[in-house]
Image 1: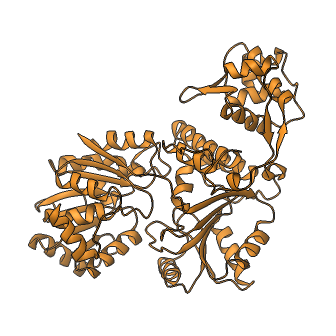
Image 2: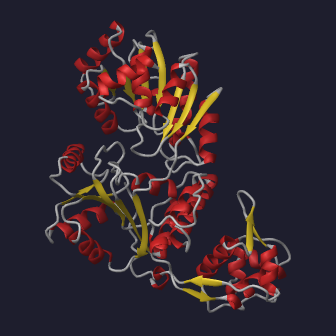
Image 3: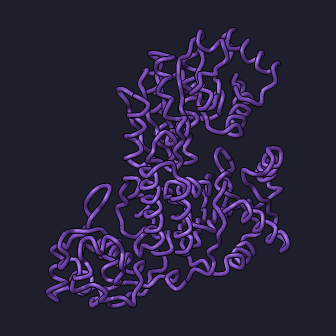
Length: 523
């Protein structure tokens, strides 16, 4: 690692590594297949760029976006490291130049899209060159359990046949334990060394607030943060343009960004944001990947993200300089209903629909939890937070008022106890509300003594309360794809009158569907 340390100082100007970088780089230099999960801003790119210099020969980097490739290539060339990107936008002369550099052995890193790898559309000289390392960035895209599944990533396993014996490093910022296992299996990483950095970003403050008159909220918030850079994520292309225009008319330096804009407009907008000529970007999810702007002070979601994976990645663009950053989510249950419909329309098959809906449900649970949001978020990624109070989310900083809801909790527990079998949260809520769905009739649940006893309460409210009873230990939720609810020993005490239950009432519960739009979420 002495050579690696010298190269780190010579080309990047650093005298020490960030957490896990040294261990990951050493694993790669030893020839191991490696999976690296590091938070946004944690220095993932160095984990293959530095080994590329140490190993010599050629390193192939699979990257999903042309803009992301260009940013990295420009930065590497600026540092004196020969790198190039191979994509459809190249002129013949540039393709020939790159091909000649590969033949001469003077190129160290070649960036290429997963689509071209899947079709083996490499420069002709690559196959015969000394390929020493294959790096797969945004590796979560290979997993059907990931939040941004791309079928072409599945075919990257064929690289092992094209370049036998060449080690592979897969990198991502967001991967649950399930996704990490899938990445290793799909890429055939064997034996794989796995490095998972901490997901906790202590400098970020998480807050969920009711989505009421969200444009006025944005105007008021930005008025208090006029000299700060930030990103506002919007539901659709039209929404991003309308929001940017509305804020511009009120004196804010804003610009819209989405995939429907011409490439030159997207590039100029991105560059203006990096140069602080534009302070606020109103964008769809198309914006952010590879944007190296350390001083983003806030990320606001004006609509519900589809998953906690996406939410974590997008909020991770705030506070990359380790100074405080605010992550605010405007929540309305109507957005969840809209996204559920879109998932049903746009997913490829029933299996993908189930996965996407499960992720959306976890996202909604994060918004509706009455416990520490950071603890919930870290738990989703398999990481424990030692304390129940992070002191840096809205729940922990401003605890909600608790109300005695023992009678409601006993009604829920009595319903579960009386059911003929164990069922999930949705069906239990339907019984209490008195819904008449097919499963109610199939299992004769309309004959249950608890059927319709709480029909004045919405099914969504019952779902929330059941989850809260699970969190407090009165109920347990077990099972994989179709989890079911059962009563715990603590729940028996509740039914016997030996325990009391309190629930809080978050302000978003008072919001209706009035802000739900029929717009499609398009990048």
